[in-house]
Image (cartoon, rainbow, N blue to C red; front, top):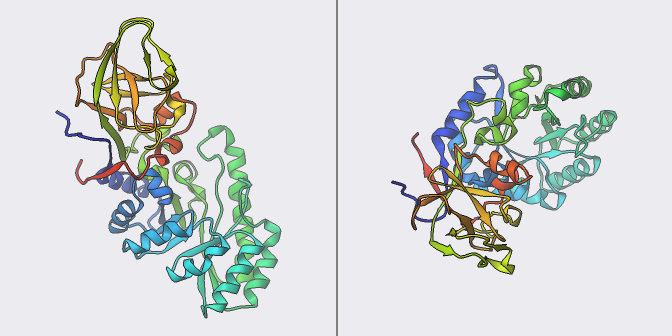
Length: 370
């Protein structure tokens, strides 16, 4: 019998440990492991995730923005934290909390040196990001001399890593492009290191890079969604186990006659006798309106129950006409068997969007054991 009594996101730390150790087994002993815990640990709880990963051997963490790094520091996380997309307005706070910025343009490098100098810093750790084809953020190959000139003019900062990001390492049809990215990063890094006079850490691999491109492991690899066992990475390695499960319950059951409707705007109208269940989770909890009108489903007693009508702010109504169930029974939005990738793909989106949308008002619980 299920112990679920309300809408809850379960975080399985045993699965997290399994995924971490499995991915670590794919890299050489000298290669560091950087765990990406941005976006609340991909929708779970960044502090819970990070403290557990720190305990089991993560070398580095990465977040998207400085505010996310502050949360980790205030939770007691000690190991280095890389901020992947810092904004200059937050540089003082970043330094206050001993976070390490990824600098990706002449503006960010200049501004960080300026702020760090005003605060009296010396050899403050920075990371230099190069754009090798993702075309999102990053210095270009011909920026090497500019970077060196800026560094030669100050002792305020010191490069601790060079990084880039693979765009399509999960797609075997894009192998030529990925190899081009890897070679571009090698070439640019070699030039910068020769002029720098010392050798920072190099890292470019995401989770699919870990699994598919050993030549891109370099000194450190980055893994985010692979740790959580969702997304494209899970498609080509079944060893990855979903860490988070989103569950709820049946609050009430209704029996409708033909012509009766469900929810706002009467978006669904019964054409036959049906039975519906109301579930206490809605778009304020992360279940987007795009999942309404039978474009999304939940699992009740191992069967799909499709969402009827429009998703409400706090509730959804699902079709249980052919499902043997009762009020109080468990409803699975996603778990290890009906994972987020399947549900998202059915609704025309990706698992990341579903996972990171789970709102703070959904209670988080931790499962320590298998």
